[in-house]
Length: 242
Image (cartoon, rainbow, N blue to C red; front, side, top):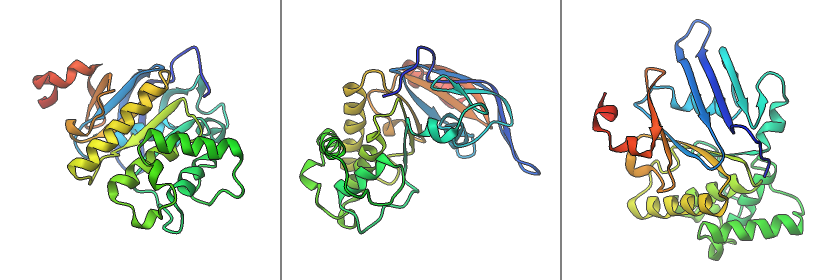
C-alpha cells in the first residue's frame, strides 16, 4: 500500500461544471485521512458520484485544487495515482467467461481482461481476498452463475487486489436483497479492520447501505456540502432532513 504523511484526499474550494451544461459541484472542501471511512449522502443529482470521480483521479475539477495520495491533480500522471486506488462500481461489466478467482485477479491491471500467467504472489493475494470476503469456496465458480450478492463481494475483492491506500465505492449495495447486503457490508467492515490505514469513500442513498466501519459523513445537496462530521451526524435528524 502506498502511504502518505498528509491527507489521503484533500479538496479545496472545488467546483465542477460542464460547458453549456450544469454546475455540478460548488466550493467543495473536504479532507479524508488514512483510516477514515466516509459516507457521501444526498439525493439524486446532489453531486455524489462526481465528487467520487474527483477523489478517484477520474476527473479534473473546473476550479479549486485536489490532492490525492499527496499528489496534486494536474501535476501527476493520473494512471500512476489510479494504480493505488481501488474502485467498486456496479455499472462496470463483469465478464461472464471468467471464474470468480480470475475476475478478482483482474484487479492487478484494473481492466476486465484475464491476467495471463498470474504470479504466485497474485494467486496468493486472490486466495487471501476471497477468504476475506467469504468467497473462498466459490473461487472456481463462473461469474455468470453467481448471485448478485456474491458478485458484489467479488467486486470488492477485485478493488482490494492492488492493496490500495484509497477505496471508492459507488452504491455498492444497490439492488441487493437483505442477506446479500448484510454479507457485503460485513466484507467491507472486514476489509477496513484488516487494513487500519485504508481510507474509503462510499456513495449511498440509504443509511442501511453503510458499513459499521463508517466513521465520517458528508451530506450533499444541489452540489454543495450542507453538513460534514463524524458518524454521529447520521443520528442528527435535522441535518439529514434539511
